[in-house]
Length: 192
Image (cartoon, rainbow, N blue to C red; front, side):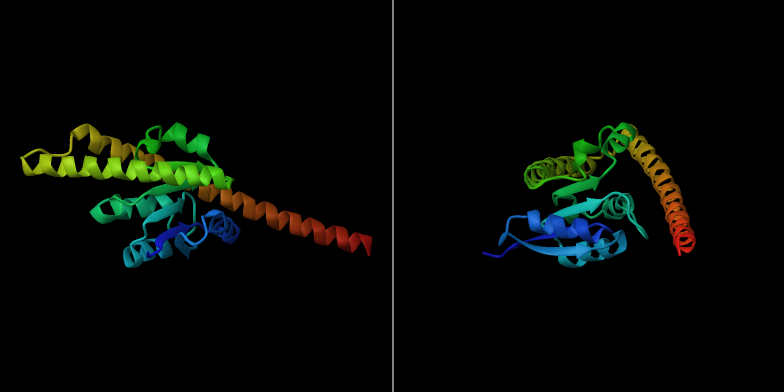
């Protein structure tokens, strides 16, 4: 029996290694991407059976990947787990996120990961059924309700604000690292 492909998209090498180790051995062929661009390319080339996607990454974040995949019906049926260390912040701003995807807060253990995989598979089936129903409604002359289109626009705006906040925080972290490095050099000079 062929192994199922799982794609881990996260800018943290340690996180990717930890997830790889937590996955049941001999069950998955594990693919890895360090940012959204690599992840998107692997999704399109490899068609993984499960995707674990970090929210905040350089070059292309997880939200931008999801936006790119919105129209790909084959991928929309793929179980997807969104990962972040800031669950409360994200869920407060996007309260219905977990209706569409499974969400797991970093750090997590193997039990939580396995549970998230099962839940993501269930949600993917429901999402696929809803898309099929929506497609048949369109064929009968229906369209996406205005409220749903408006909700998508609101989600995009929230994601954009979160991305900007993440970039600001990353800049502050980089500045703090630089200042700590300078302080360490000063301390070393004074001690010599």
